[in-house]
Image (cartoon, rainbow, N blue to C red; front, side):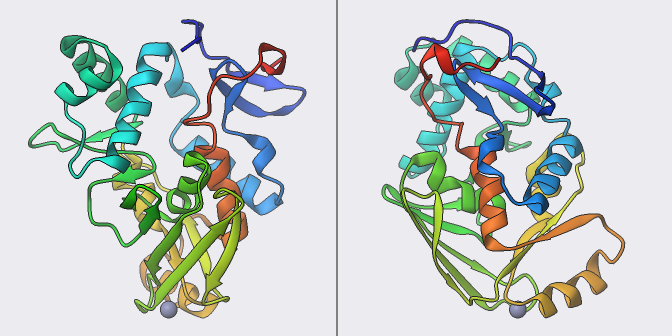
Length: 266
Ligand SMILES: [Zn+2]
């Protein structure tokens, strides 16, 4: 770990949309991953819906370390990582781990069960049985939404298989990635599209915006579903590739090691 306790850098760089420096040379989101105008618009809407960039103030090395450990724990353990496991795997003492988890929850980077207080998720992964199953090299996990499912491979730098269902008719949707989780491989059915609803509530994306980011087997089923459920709601219809661009922009930086300081944000 070579990250300083620097304040995250939030601001406009050369007229580009805002980003935060997670660690030296690693910006969130990775705007370079987003080339399609539609994907760019959807990402900007997602970020502004959750005021995501403003939530990073004071985010530092220790918090980053615990956040990454939670995500790795969710992928590797048969249960959600608890304080004892996090303390052991990060070398941070239990009391401090508890404080840092609290901060991550307040930033909506980690989700806790309101009743038990147990960690149940850290974007993009969750212990909850969502309709999006992602098979990683280390095992099968659930992702919070379609964007999260399509960003998980890039985050781990590994190819994944996504099994989900059409939100309209329940038909199976299966996507395999290539190039270390950064590109689409096989998409079945080939007519698959994604609806990205823009709705953020109660400081928790998992319970709001994530529930409206879903796969559909055809545009027709997306349209039918919208007519019934959210006819006036703001959102974006994305292709799987556009959705993957958003997923890569959001999750590609999450576990990426600090880069050469020459690559730091201007
Ligand atoms: Zn369908």
